[in-house]
Length: 488
Ligand code: ADP
Ligand code: GLC
Image (tube, rainbow, N blue to C red):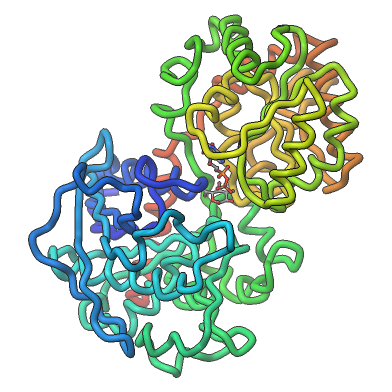
């Protein structure tokens, strides 16, 4: 494509600055891939408490952000380059909203003013464009946090952004940004948009719903999830709304930042390895076993899990079968944080069983060690828009055990023992039995069909989920959005 586009990319978390999940991985990688394709892209995120200002350059002028009935707020703006790129990332600094330990909440739950925080952030991103100045052809919003952008660009900010096309990417439909309708006066989008086709839902505001209605294009992070969210089982109440807008809905699979997730150059693992010296993976396994105080035996299958301890990730399914599984000769390592019941349940398991190890918390280093040191990676999600860990696992020759949903279904090819092909193990029903039998099946292949297992590892490790390919798909969506914006 020859058209060089100006793109404003907004996200509530971006690697390597702040991360709670895959959105941050995407926001840290996709803009770089778009820039490599020749586009002019800026990224904007909040300056959270943990992001050290001394590593950033401060812009000389503060940014005035109109907050309707609340008045005008003044924010600081910082910037730097995204690592290993020419992409500039801007940080919106507003202590009262973002100077907190959590991104979205704390142990008590979500922050009560999340609606205002992210409406403020969205408006600040547009004000920043005016100040720089930067005239976006594309405004790219991600998830509910910035889903108000398409509507803002058409209403309160129409004077400056009338020509910009808007794209909204849904990384997770479960979180929609529900707020009290009085927030309209802070948004300043006009009460006429408080209707059932746009913002209104059960007499409240649903920011994601409004974004879906108004954006020129909607994307989500796998083809399968793009279909699933149009059904009642996966639609979280918005399936009808999405069906009504599916003419502008596209599924684009996430890529992998192979500079970060690659066993041949991973600085966090005990021994680097690749396809041609995969035997060295055993040293990573030993290191992992050692770290967690597990029995140091290469022949015992080791199953890893990294992820949020929430319903979505199938954590209750794991809880229901874990004791039964641990009766077999296998080891399980889990890393994660999340719901209180799950953290205490698995802490109890770890206490009682010597072949189970747990780290509650967030640790990027351990996530890498688990990817490299495990034989199999467990991801029995109830729903999974894309899922990144199973794709990272493939690169590490760590075969995923997954439920066939969303991006898991799109990326994992079930082991076919007639033809000895596949890159993982899949089950379909979200039941304890299905999970239990699939884990035992994988363990059996590991123990008794070594050749088949190794062949799958070799196949998995040469697969490539490139951000370049995904970025090219986003380019097409941007053009689609521009076309429909201009009405031709
Ligand atoms: P989601 O965004 O739904 O949480 P993804 O699979 O897309 O799921 O991405 C999760 C990302 O967050 C991965 O990069 C994974 O390694 C990382 N991650 C999740 N939990 C932890 C944790 N406790 N410690 C370190 N990394 C984690
Ligand atoms: C969400 C989804 C996950 C996806 C990630 C990045 O957090 O839960 O499946 O991989 O976003 O798009």
